Image (tube, rainbow, N blue to C red; front, side):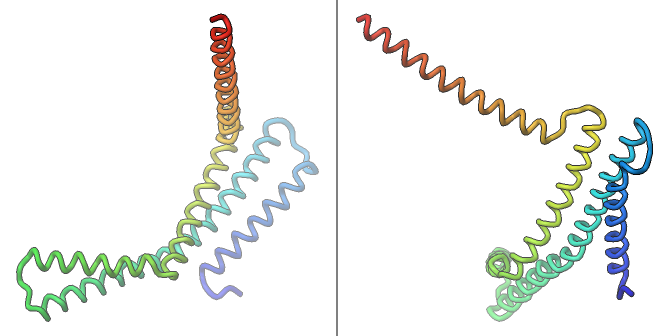
Length: 188
């Protein structure tokens, strides 16, 4: 039995993903015609992606409090050190206090950003966010195909081909110019 709500949701989503995988393998066996078959396949794909988005959001939401805690703890510590320094040195000038506070924040946050722990937490946060975006892009591709619109991957392929063609045209143009130049110099 799961220990907490997160485990219950994870177990449910894993079961749902297994169900969708099973259902997608049974699709040819279950009779249906025309648009319903296409719609069912598309909904299975979308369901899988939505399940994976949920898992990515769960990872993101698990990591975000750790990230926030590190930022807030660093902010608090820098503020505490700045106040101590101002009190210890009996500084009352606004500009001097501001400079001390900025310098202290810079030191503390530089130390935080250079720490391995912060790097790991930031990396997990960015990875889960990238996972969410990747699955959302896949859903957009599924619907683009359904609407007979070009998908992102098709546009990327076309762009790659256009880039190759531009390079080839440039090479041919350079060769043509070189031949014309050689022709002009041989006439003279």
